[in-house]
Image (cartoon, rainbow, N blue to C red; front, side):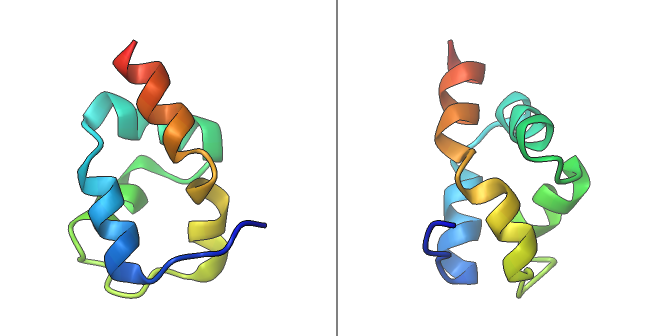
Length: 68
């Protein structure tokens, strides 16, 4: 597993994704879309390492695919 960044870094990275990209990230990682939204908005201030680990390695692929 890749190194997992802190919660602030994770939220900031998710904020760069639009809704279709978040939906793609959800699909790729099997993390619910609403969970990603909560982490992005910092409603979930300290997401679990297992949750972040599921989607972190898929962020670039989600951003690229949905942007294409």
